[in-house]
Length: 493
Image (cartoon, rainbow, N blue to C red; front, top):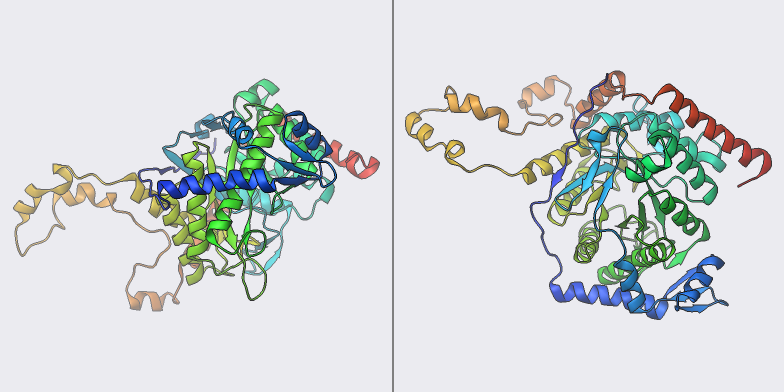
């Protein structure tokens, strides 16, 4: 049976506060004011009626809902503060206990940087399977995201193809933005129940969690709202996601970006808890800034974006809500200095202001291109930060005064028994060059990406996750085929 690597968690040893107590209160109260004075708009008539029935201010002509402070706080209080994300292998379950955090890949890139040609191209279902299998082998990846889209499958049921290939290639928890309309969401739940063995088993240990995103600023489309009920009824956690963009969908300030991000996520949490009280949820904010020269996402992000992300996490932590934040993603087009700088910047901020879950490993070009090579380089950065957070021992044995006395001045510790005992405790890189200048020149001046590419190739050639039982794999295939026939032949969607 294939060896399942243990999950590398990031221990939450430190809690840097980037906002003081008054600022946290100000951000939270401002988000409540946004929801009271501005509210949200929606395409869902059902939601308008639901909120009117619950005593909220509803304008049926403009499709606007405004929430009272008391109602928001009442619904926030219903959200579970502790979650466990189940995995096909129970040893890989993730307990979101507030003491450990877990990493996943970047998500839903429409293109992949082909490991064989070095060129970017549209991604396929096979690519998603390979990247999921690669992630399954990496201990730094705690759960698997839909890293790329299955662009060669019918758009009407692409979500189902993506979930199917992920379940076939990992025993870790699967989280995905697949299934954002009720037709596909029902198919996803059907597949999840097949893998879990029953509806009850799935509810007990949810093997899948769903990302559902608000359209910033402050608009909830009908599809994701319908999915709220479908996933919540199945017991599956829902990651309520805001992707606010300063200057475009939020004010042109870090403070405005943070407040609107918080308001958008809380609006989704309030809606979910009104529809399904006690439903499992994650608060997920990816605040970013706009490139003022092009109007696109700022690929050269730095202090503003990272500060906004840290502030969002701190507010969610203040509310006791499980949350997700970005980590390691870059705007760079290749694994270069920019990629390393941005990945390290986000890794350090994530260690010091930690969420429960992090996403972003392997992404290039603002999440538009996925690179298996960058994935391994990002995992090394995560490992560095995780090693730092594991902590170091400062007892008599590790300080080694007796050894220092024995070796004495003008000597060395190379032959010391203490060195032999502890030298392998020191962290060692898999990919960075540690040889001499001459050795590096003789080897063709390789970059860390060369070593990472070789390791990615080795894993893809050797690693095979524990397969699904044949009857379960066949059932998933039948579910996908059935939904595809409905969508394409009868227009059931």
